[in-house]
Image 1: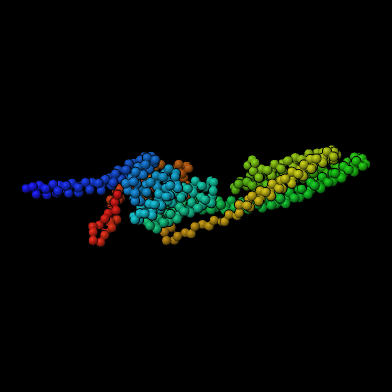
Image 2: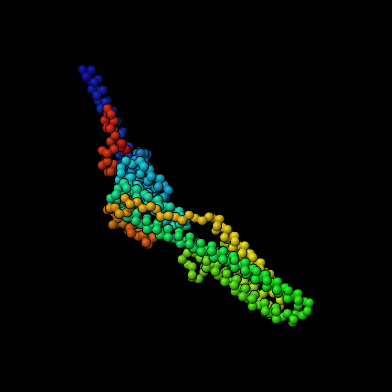
Length: 409
């Protein structure tokens, strides 16, 4: 009897230990499940910081889950933290054995790169170009994995349109830069001529002044007055050079209109200031020469000569600064892949197809440029646990001589 009781107690102990073991093994899954559900609810409410907190806690319970990394990346994307989103989504794409999750991660990575390109477009076109090229590569990768993913195909078309617009804008800027350099070189040559003419007029006036001292002012009065017209013509030509330079340095698309003043303190502004002062001194000298006051005209003539030389040096310095940056390589459009392109039919990320019709249009800062507004970029979080359950069988790893092992939470 005592032996029976002893065996019964041992049996109770084994069963209890087995139940506790099963409960303990399920606890992380249940914890991760609830944490992800909480994060997805916060994501749906637009509370992305709370969603990230929940995903971070779930990541502790299931650190190898690419689906948590995917959801985390989408929340970071919605926050505008594109660097962090790229890291999370690369992790999801690289660690997932699920082809559809990999495709969705590539789609989201394409969206991240596209938005990063939009952020750079006003300040650095070439950096924006690189981001758009990256977005195209990700969309193409998504279509290679899931040819039926329409969201990737549609976004690929948007990215290609925007990329072409950026290429056209870069080309336009390059052409404008080359025209500006040519105009600056011509302006330097004209300044050389103006300096030579002003120096000649100054020397002629000085010679007449010396001659007047030796004889009488009346004897050279007509010759002094005759210098007034070429002096005034020189002032007009100086202003013409200034206007030509101002027109050449206008941003692309504004050439031909009324020139805008150059940025204060910049090299172009310094050149303009010297030319304006030179023209003012030249006109003052012309007025005095017209009054046969040759000796009084010498000082404004000398000052005009110095301003012209200063303008020439400032213009040369501006040329050196522009050339110092080196000629940027002409960007080439990305190679188009024939096999998948943007012509395939496909599906959008889970949860997006049902919600897109109810979504408000994107805000102005979130819109692609006008020529690319085919559809808004698509992205949404998914309920990762439901799909985890559906895909368990595909992730069973058979071990020789043992039972299959599930890769679960």
